[in-house]
Image 1 (spheres, rainbow, N blue to C red):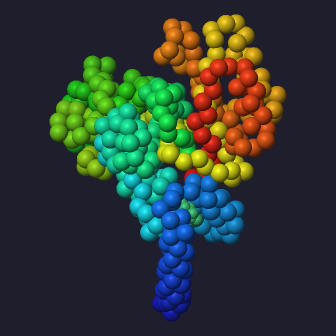
Image 2: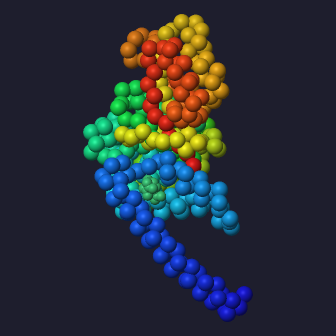
Length: 357
Ligand SMILES: C=C(O[C@@H]1C=C(C(=O)O)C=C[C@H]1O)C(=O)O
């Protein structure tokens, strides 16, 4: 390619960048005016954001991949929303956890992410309206449910208004090269479980495995002591300046964690939604089958079914159920009505758009 051709393309890019710049600011101006119309009411509208992202993916002519343009527009919306009112989001800290990554993936980098010392504290701060939303891990594809989040959902007045699905990659991290001399590996209990087979195969049997409160805490400890390693993700590796001795050591290559976003609002329909609910059933043969019949009878698909011992009575169970559709969709509404006729405890946690990114 000649210098002349290169210059032509660069000149074109310079012109386009200025056009994009003006268009971005025009977009932001509309968002600011929308903020004034909302007049201090609810600013964040997950249903609208999901529709914007889905439309961008559908109409994307390429060559940029749909996922990439959606990620760019995620950040554009984040900045536009921040002009209306910056959002503050509680997550399970410290900085560098997968919960923080999930928060940024869902709200973009203009949101203020606030590290909390426990999932309980994150819920409390949002319940007390000191922060706007909480992002809490709810299930991992390898390890199953996050019990503490489920327990908090039974009693919280907060409503689910979104979900985030995050691919989880774990790395073996240390402050120097090579695995010689490692006496201990720190990790969150879930990360230890998710890398169990890799650890059995690749580290000597006498290396101690110690579970700590978060992967970021594990990385912090490994940064301080050269005889220790950590299992954690990219964000923690960068934050604590650690070397990656081995990458993507999770046993299950499609390892993902699903997070829920909770706040104080109801979310409208988008046509591709989910509804989360909790029901209880007596501990009798056939009780669960009887209870769930209205879901199948109304042609509603169930995407999650998780049982947990109820705190109320010994050996009574509560069931965490996700179904496809919004609780205002006619078939879902009928299914919910049927459930309510069959059990004394149904709590609809919220309806929200299915994850787009
Ligand atoms: C601009 C709005 O406010 C927020 C920002 C949005 C955007 O930048 O497109 C979309 C939804 C809201 O979360 C709106 O409600 O339309």
